[in-house]
Amino acid sequence: MQPAEKFSFECCQETADWLLARTTQRPRIAIICGSGLGPLADSLKNQESFKYTDIPHFPRSTVAGHDGHLIFGELKGKQCVCMKGRFHMYEGYPLWKVTFPIRVFKLLGIEMLMVTNAAGALSDSYNIGDLMIIQDHINLLGLTGENPLRGPNEEWFGPRFPALSDAYDRKIRTLAMETARRLGYASFVKEGVYCMVAGPNFESVAEARLLHLLGADVVGMSTAAEVVVARHCGLRVFGLSLITNKVTKDYDAKESVDHHGVLEVSRRRASMLQMLLTEVVGSLDSDTSSCGQKETETSYQNGA
Ligand code: HPA
Image (cartoon, rainbow, N blue to C red; front, side, top):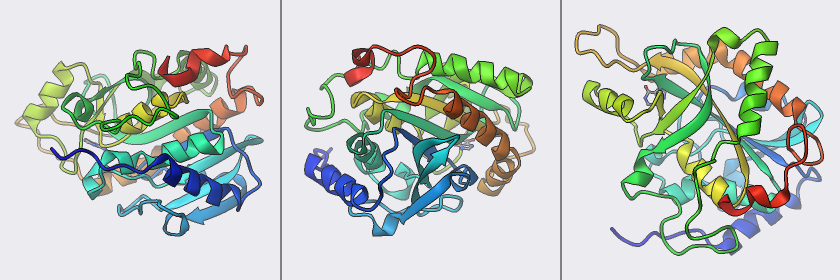
């Protein structure tokens, strides 16, 4: 394998400075909208929108259902920045490019990353249309050598060996589950493990069985790499999956998954994911982006 080429700190700074010069908004929360979940970004108030193609160094979205705009605005009175459309490895991007926006977010002053995605269910107890609060992930690509942090470490952002044992913020997960109950969503909101694969093909039966055996409840083609980079630079992370299909573990199954089906379920259930995420954002303390009592600043720094 060739050593990874990467965007330098200066590149990230250039992009952040470009954005800071064009908006007066100074959000602390960044939200990534997954497949078909763009309406979440559309719901922001006082929007200022930038096309990915206009932002220096930004990659372009090439996938149906991923729009390609960075939108600043307010959700429940809190300033946020939303990625309407994300980047994937299967588009041909190396993971350091896929995760470039996360480092730009850090330089914009973001403290919390909220990730959403569409995912296929491996666990039999999950149904199409369920929402899953991500408790943890299996970064299958990372385990096999394809990690966005591979190559020289950018010390400004974080340590060479970041911890990942507490990647998905426990307090926000608890808050999200309480919020789900309050909204009457308890019957279809679960908490579980997300496994990231590269795609673009959906899983074979043997692969689905393997991932399930490894401990994954759902599988998708995004998120874990972004979360690794976010934790490396000390962002707090919250993740939500929308279950758009069941991944078959049965050779006799008649149905198979397709991208249009995934987008169709996203359209139908996206409003509930949007409501849950919006209510969670509304419950965060406005000064610290934390929930309830203040966190000690250092406990979330540098992957600790
Ligand atoms: N597999 C991988 N990624 C996905 C799936 C799936 O079944 N559904 C939505 N994204």
